[in-house]
Amino acid sequence: MYIAITRQQLGDNFRGSVRDFVKYLEKENEGKSPERQELYFNQEENDIDAERVIAEIDANTSKLSKRDPKFYSIVVSPSQRELKHIGDDPEKLKQYTRELMKVYAASFYRDREITVKDVLYFAKLERERTFSEKDKAVKENQPYASKILELQHQIRAIKEGRVQGDIAKLQETINALEKEAPHKQNGKRIVPGMAKEGHQSHIHIIVSRKDVTNSHSLSPGSKFRTSETTLNGEKVKQGFDRDQFYRAAEKTFDKQFGYPRNFVETYHARNLLDKDPKRFFTLLLGLPNHERQAARQLLFKAGVNVPTIPVNKAQLAYKAMMKLKKGINKVMESGSIGI
Image (cartoon, rainbow, N blue to C red; front, side, top):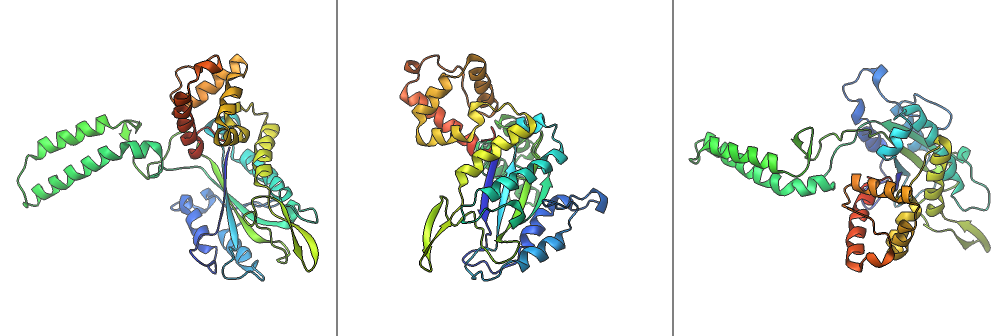
């Protein structure tokens, strides 16, 4: 499960409307008839139109300064393995989102209990993902893409009479480069903007910075850890516990759908890999044999070359461990194994 929380992005100030972001989220609805379009939902309702989302989020900004974000975006991206487990069922994803938002509310550290009824949010299901410049496949295909583009420019120049050359020979070279490119999908070189195959369902959530009463701030980005501050001479609890949120998010999914999460798919594993890689690999090696082999298969499918996982810690040399750590980090960052 890959979950990202980001604040409203508008440069140095946040005076703008949520409209542009909502417009961006409408990309999958373009060209579809009304009955086939995916609308928004919240904790209690379905089929909420975009204009209502804009109106309610934009109106819920009382006492926020121009430098305060007015809303946050949460992207919930289950791995393909998680999606396969639930049959890529959009209704199950919506059910999970509603449970997730209960966890989100409970992760605020306040003097009073925060529940999902305090949170103003709207969520939308998307079924497609496209490759971007950040994807490993695009990056590794880039040298071939650059050469192909250069040759295409040469062909254009020949056709326009600006230079002389053998178009057929240049096209043969282009065809050879297309075949040599290391990453393909359905026989075609992977490029930015190409739709990814397989289950790609994910959820975008727009959540207001203010609570539903428009009187209290609920910012998941104000403090990454819980703390206390003094306000008008009194100690006040503040902050948002992201660790608690991420851990509870995956536990909620596992409990709700009976998902058998492997060690390498856990938030705990990602933290260990970042902070204590030696401990990460010790625990990996200590898994029961069937779980260790499942971990190896998950990593291999995600693009990490793990021919074998050593059976004892002495076999795992430092350089090999760091090389493997680098590879695992890449697929974790891309969400490929759902951490």
